[in-house]
Length: 182
Length: 196
View 1 (cartoon, rainbow over the protein chains, first blue to last red):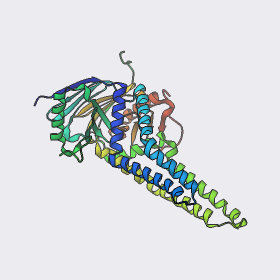
View 2 (view 1 turned 90 degrees about the vertical axis):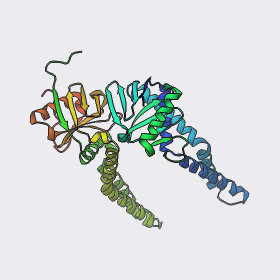
View 3 (view 1 turned 45 degrees about the horizontal axis):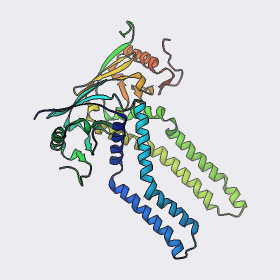
View 4 (view 1 turned 180 degrees about the vertical axis):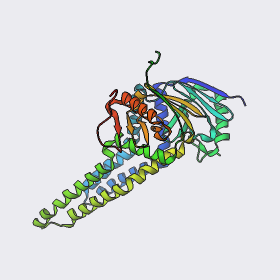
């Protein structure tokens, strides 16, 4: 199989997409749904106080605030904080060198950037995650290299996906997949 | 720009173990986040326990329930004991998990330290980190540690692989790179100075 070479210069938007994908990984859908469920429960609790003429009005007000926060404010605020943090980190140069080359060979991934060169076998990668805009390759906990998918042609993207599925098996995760990719 | 003729430079070949990585992370974290040190947290908890205990006479005088300040005092004291016992365990486990997640860290690597940067080369990768990327340097009885750079954990140079002369050169390099942000543990006393 012919290797796929991706050359790109990351932008501030790429940094935001990468952070967003990392946040999605850290907060799986189940957690977000649980927060929404608790929000609904708090609102129901708050509504029950006037409906059933219960005495605890202050507790109902607090429950209403918690419900509105969990249901409508928490996720937008989190997204805004992630976006702002990513832009600040990119401006401060904490995302590493913007120009990078990543080459997906049959046996290893090759990275080339200013100050870093690596040929890492697929078995040594911690895991990989792909959402609609970015592919994250984790060399270990907390060490991640991002490849923007816009830098790849659709055909190249398909080849990379099949390569990662084949070589990394359960360690390759895709957004929307119900379970680890087999 | 060409490197200065007399600029210090050392080379070492080393293989890190999980235990060494844990120790280095612990030493680096103490200086990167001084407020998270174990004794700082324990002192905070004991202060809160003392404050709660001081409210017991007031509760007795006001005929208020004594169990509230007494319970708070006991809870804070228990928290202090838990922090003292479990914080190193939790931190060590976390560092161990990071080390085990990245097999690249356990590979034999050739380290080169110069006045401006550190370079590491193993069979899978080669990278260069400038000292300006790190927040601080620490010298422990077992290693030199540069910490606070984004990405991988701290850069660790084991003293076991260095001759006394190289260790002295490493001290000069770290002193020059970090100045007052170069800390030493295990040896109390004066801070080493650049170009003594």
